[in-house]
Length: 267
Image (tube, rainbow, N blue to C red; front, top):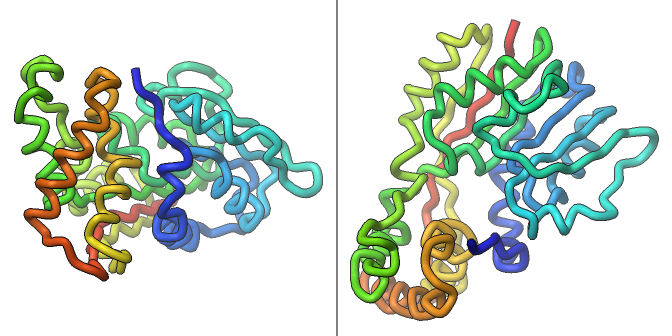
């Protein structure tokens, strides 16, 4: 199975960091001492957020060994405890009794990779201490040509046969709910205060071909996980041709990216 490529993912580090910090800015730091970052990636932003929030304990969880390999040596000032561990975000709260009593459960651009968001958010809510906060950001750009074209290419040969006759579902389109659905779920989970916002991030890339590199570091992983290695580059090449035919080969390129930012405080 293919793993994430940390270097490819960080090619657009500044653009990916912007919604992360918008999410962190929603958090009330005065009550946050113990923080868990679910889908921490290489841990760099986790450590920066923990420093800004002044936490005493940070745990980062991710499913990618390659990403977690980049967390070695990350530290926080003072006596802050820092740990990074491999885990499944969907079942994280059920795997250990220690996964309880958090002041902040944060998940940036990770929830979309798992289904049944209502069930997952209930588990994360159970992990909160009284007065704990939930902060989640999910990409919601599944209707953009950058995602739609990937599905179309996956439905052509030789890729479809190698995929077992079925194109892997786009998590941004299949798993992600409407903003109002997240608001309803938070209400039913008993949160006393909440904010759910759909934001469009206006990214200006050097050229439209940069969209290929952007998606290659994230959404195309669903194909790489199921395609044999010798079809990875042919898939990217076919995707590039099809995408540029759709959006044009232009420079610069305006890439609007929709994301849902969710914050809530439990009683």
